[in-house]
Length: 195
Image: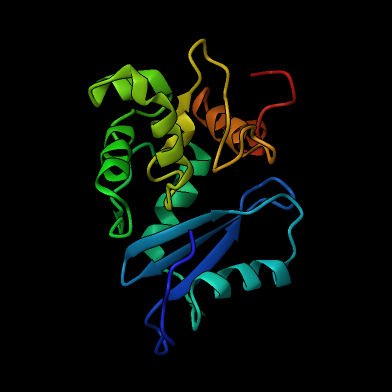
């Protein structure tokens, strides 16, 4: 999601990024005074230069700075110790329908999944399944609003982050973290064909 932003003052929109235990896996959290604006789930093997270009194209003037509370909670998620977040998110750019989808999705507990159709039904009509998928593809704060917990009817993982398929393995990785006790293998993610 690209946002218009003027030149940020020093410290106004600081950024941080950190790697999880899988080689080449990085999440980048864009935050402003403790509120998360965006979380990028970077493709495996993406370089630092490409990452900085992506950040600066969406948020010109950002600077690197860690928010300890956000970092502790998100690191805890990957270790399996944080199952509920106390993180403020800026969803001001979302349509009212998208905001409702994200609100409904935020209520799916750790280790559980719902189908696109089940979310649509909770919003009033099973016919909204595709619209639910579109709203989830626009989720600016994956993990915190757990769009990875929404799967196809029948349990297949389906697409993730505006892709028809989970090309980068993030959805499988996140579901794998939540499917069992934390261990180095769980943090690295499931082996292909194990989910």
